Image (tube, rainbow, N blue to C red):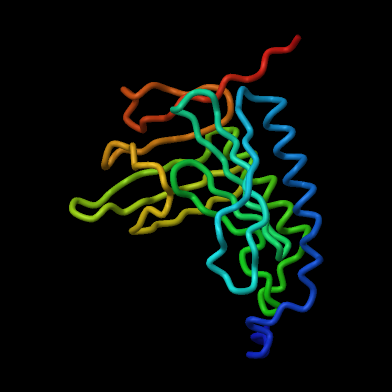
Length: 196
């Protein structure tokens, strides 16, 4: 039988530096997306942090040229860690927690960064708005051998919601895509950069 971690392990972070490899991995990801796809990359200061202990250091926005394609914002934190904002409202913290009780490893978090970026470029992020009077924002990742989903009742992103209620929107940075007449309303892929 597996024992629960001691209560004092929750909220305690002994070695946050183990996540430092995330930062160069994110830089490599940004360079790779800029090289492979027709996207613009904008770097700037991150918005003020709501945390008393973790600063938001830099915001990198990767925006496909076409507006019907999924953007990706990567926020570098002082933890060290990353926030990924994909599509219209999917928000991922890497590491998810970082406390001693959760015991996340750098290898696992690096794998998650790769999984999320591969899924986004392959069109495996779906977003949907449901709810008649109060919008419910749903997102679903259907990666290679893994699935994750989430629901929220608010929209903290600064851009307006643009999905048709009760319809699904598959947003990607990869090849392929279908038009708005498709029942799932899959969104077109960004244009790959042509070889010289």
